[in-house]
Length: 102
Image (cartoon, rainbow, N blue to C red; front, side, top):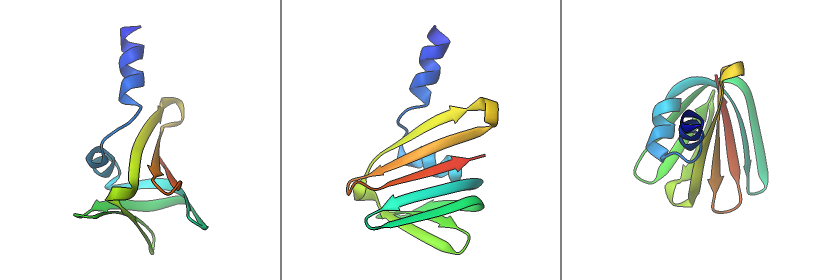
């Protein structure tokens, strides 16, 4: 029970810097639902960067910038059986970005 509790805790909300460190360069599928637009990329080379005011998600030649002030939370859920980690970024305007990293 203690191990299960620890596992659940580590797979919930994570800091922005942890997300950037874990997805700095990885293979992932991305789905972004933002104000009036939806983007989806499957099995692409993903890079994430952070500067003073924005989180940058780069998938192929597409560059998505999210203002740090608009990020409400980043949640992580691990699926060991399929070797995938899912991250969900919730934004203040109701938008969300899901990153499935493998």
